[in-house]
Structure formats: C-alpha cells, structure tokens
Image 1 (cartoon, rainbow, N blue to C red):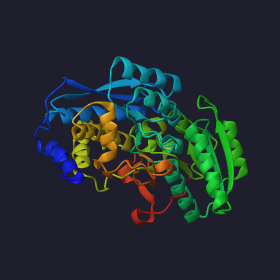
Image 2: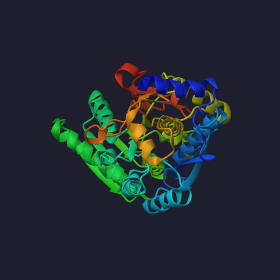
Image 3: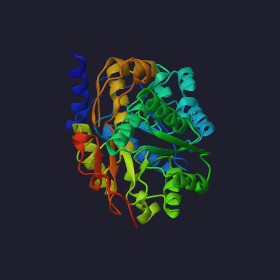
Image 4: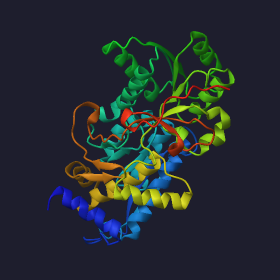
Length: 401
C-alpha cells in the first residue's frame, strides 16, 4: 500500500466514523501533552490551542481511538516563561508519560525544550513558535506546522515595497522571537539593497510603559510601525500608540494573528480600528475535509470561527495519532520515524516532514496573509486582505480620528 493510500485510509476511517482500532490494544490510553501559555504570555492563544487539542481527542476517540486506545490530552501551563516550560515538560514526560507534546507559542520556550526533548526521546511540535533556530537545529525530535520568521519577514517586505514605505520602526520584545525578527529585517534590507530606514526599539517583555519609545517613533516620523509584541505586549503597544496619536495616523502591522481573536475588540475597542496584522489563513480559504469538519464543529460549539492556533493544534493531535497508527505503536521513537516516513493532512493542506536544509527541516508552512480591520468589531473574515496580491480584497485604509 502506498504512503498516500495509507494516509487516506486513516483519515477516511475517521471522517466516515469507522473504527481505526485495527491492532491489539496494549493500554487504555495514549497521552499527548499540550504545553502552552494559559495564565500569562500569549495566554489567549494557549487557550485556543487547548480547545483545538481537546476537540481532536474527542473526535478521534468518538471514532474508536487509535490501536484500540483512547487519546488523552494532558494540559500544562508554561505561562510564557522558559523555566515554567522546562518544569512543565519534565512533569509531562516523567510523571504523565506523554508520547508527544504540542502547544508551544513562545520561541524562547520552544528553543529551551529542544535538548530536553532529545534527552527524553519524544517528538515536540511548535504550534506557533516561529524562530528559525527551532527547525534549523535539525533536531530529529522537533516538528512544526506553523509559520517561520523568514516567511513573515518576506510578507512584510513585499507589503512595504508595494506601499512605498521608507521609514520603518520595529517595536520588539527582548526575546528570541522579537530580536530574531529585527535581525531578519536588517539582513533582508542589506542583502536586497531595499534602502529602508529601520529604527529598532527593543523592550523588556514585562514592561508596562512603552510611551517613551513610541514618542521617539512619532518624533522620528515613521511611515510604518511593526508591532512585534506577544500577548499583552501587543495590546500595550497598540493602546499607548493610540493614546499619543501615533496610531492609527501611522499604519501599524501586528506580527501575528492575535487581532483576529474576539477578545481583541474587548481589550481595545475603537483603539483597534485600522490595525493591520499577519494572518495564517482566512475563513473563506479552501480547507481539507479534516479542516472543514473542525471549522463546523468549532463554530457550533463556540459560536465563532476558529483561529489558526486552534485549528493547528487540532491538526497536530490528528497527525500524531495518524503517525501512531502508521507505526503500529505509541513508542515515541516509532512515532518520530512515522512522522518522517509518511504524508499527512493538516486542516489546511498536505504535510510532509522532510529532512530539508536550514529552517525548512521538519517544517510545514501555512500561507501568510496581511489583513486590516477597517471598522470596530470586524472579524478576520470581514477584514480587508492586503497581501498576497492574488488574494487581495482591497487597499490599505489610512486611519484617522
């Protein structure tokens, strides 16, 4: 049986409601860890990842589980902090005996877990952590079905060139994610002779007053502000930029899809209008059969469309379960081998974890969109797609008050 046909057999069994318990049961449960921020950091994204993971376990178990066993997700809060991520990892592997871990949002945390994952001998998935060093480590234990920073920087550069911006301010937290994106933008600017004036403002991720840096940006006369804040920091930059009349008078682009969440408007109200942001998909995009099922089920349960993090966590649990099915075993080493050996379907398209060069190692990237909210209360589906050109639904709206 070919690789593609084997993958189709597993997914068809799930989608049609047949049991995939084709091999003798060895234990009642297979445990998969979800290590993600729930009380600090990008906690809203972590909560979405938990929703997706839990729905994936319910989905698979309702069809009979895998190898005669039920999938159980074990949730652990890393609070967006490296030390808590490491201690949570140890608990999941030594006490809970999980066979794989997903849910990482913060790049610094994910990078800190590579060596522990290798030592424990289990696969660990980045659900949204995007720093290039994660997959460029070429660790056999690391897998990612999320954007990498070069893709994000490429989208920014294309957008900047299309709009003719010249003076670009980067407001970034002092983490691997923030500093990494600044480095990438500097490198692209130099290597491609883009001629951009880049001014960097790096802040401690625990800072609560960024007004001095934002006033410098305003006085400098920036054409564009790149908001490289994660979680609460992204909101803080936007609010304080609005309060000093830097934004929306000067366009601002958020570095990932946090403005697509319903809580965005609860936190910012009118101050969020005209914000532009990176997105990894759109409600009207074509999905796989798996993705269509999840989208409909999520909307029914939560009365809202799922954001990328929820859909990706759902897909990652299904991919790991399919790898267990292909391996005929829940042994982590067998799972990792199956992850490399077979093709998979995520919610948004096919996945193959190749031993590619550089940051493309074990990497599957979603499309990168740039979207703008032009009216208070807009959802992702109601926003204007500014990039890429083939998906564009309108032009950048200049903000005013």
